[in-house]
Amino acid sequence: MSDMPIVRQFAAMVIDVNDLDLEAVFWGRVIGEEPGPVRGEGGWVTVGSLATGVQLVLQKVPEPKTVKDRIHLDFMVDDVAVAVEQVMRLGGRQLGDPRPGGGVTMADPEGNEFCLGSFLRTKAGKRVPL
Image (tube, rainbow, N blue to C red):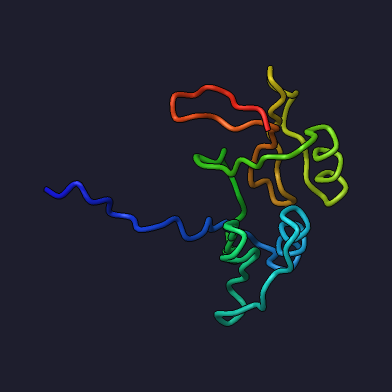
């Protein structure tokens, strides 16, 4: 068995959505990128760019979200309280109280979960402030 990684590079995070237009506008504003054109006979929109390293692909699906996400996005922000307010003005929701240290779990307009925080973590889990 080779020690070479299977994955060459992280490419994108795909989010299942029902309303492609609503979610494209929401995520475009959250990450500060214009959504690309709808493609695949109305089934896909890419938000973000390869240059910024943040690329979300929205995939239109018929079924609504019904259970807690098993994977979610974490975003670094300069001010968590300000970012929470901005996300809520765009139609997102706060899903709980801020955790010790300032992380907050949010949801997009369709309930897909993501977190906002003002720190990074090392591989060992140590917090590194921005």
